[in-house]
Image 1 (cartoon, rainbow, N blue to C red):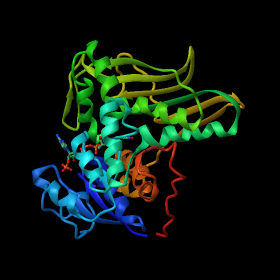
Image 2: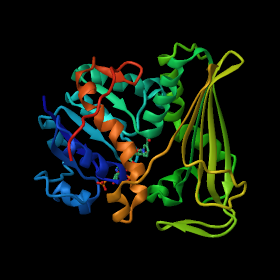
Image 3: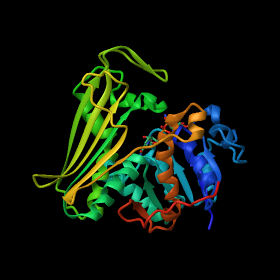
Length: 344
Ligand SMILES: NC(=O)c1ccc[n+]([C@@H]2O[C@H](COP(=O)([O-])OP(=O)(O)OC[C@H]3O[C@@H](n4cnc5c(N)ncnc54)[C@H](OP(=O)(O)O)[C@@H]3O)[C@@H](O)[C@H]2O)c1
């Protein structure tokens, strides 16, 4: 079976999603939405640094909603809930690098999206590396042990090489530390808390509460990354932790540590990837790191790998999402997602 796909924006993650769609034997790119005026009317291949695809971008949402397609790969900087609702109601599945189960948007939004999916007979699924695939791995690890007591998960990266670093501006980066950033982070990063829901559902953990912890680190000198300015004394790093509680016991701990370069105050160590531990009998430990491909090294863009590992868990899920029961779907209720081997 071939699924017809509309790509929604071609930013950092979207460009890699398009490459993934073009290589996937069950997927066919049939349309593409461009938000930037300068990208409208262009061949998608030209925007993604690959051969011409024959698919021309449009900013005409009505035209895309009326198109015959199985799925929209929705990857703007920030989702527009009305837009996602309309796409679902038009009978197209939505896969995204943003959503998990949409709980953190509030029950109104979650219900609207679920109803739109029911109306369209389709599903909404979100993944990426984290939130997404990496935390799913940590849950799977618990299968190998008796009596697991705790899941520990850490993402620790140096984002100085991350071209989309300007996206951290809405978390307070480049601005003075202030108590208000705690609430901002808790809200903007709501999908991270939703990962606790998914792990809890997968592992039958009766979570009673989720706690959020935030600390920031500041630059000790003026810094600039990809045109994004971080003056000395302003936020250039942060540590956030979400803890899933069963009464007074911490059972799931998800932590992210992001640093823009070295020498911040405080100078948290960078572990370059994911460190996961299941505390049980026996304990299960793993670390997941990524190595740039020869193509990424030769193009001088090794950090593009972060966008690939965000896009591909979303792309590879499309066939099972299109076959799923309508509604908001997560790793907790989809069958195993199986990518394709293709000979080079
Ligand atoms: N789950 C994960 O592991 C993970 C990891 C990284 C990122 N993400 C998420 O993935 C999504 C895409 O990230 P990205 O780095 O690719 O983002 P990006 O490059 O900053 O933006 C993606 C596209 O959004 C469109 N856009 C920009 N400003 C907009 C606005 N004001 N209104 C509507 N559209 C706008 C642009 O479309 P055009 O292409 O038309 O210019 C842009 O290329 C984000 O939601 C991000 O949070 C998830």
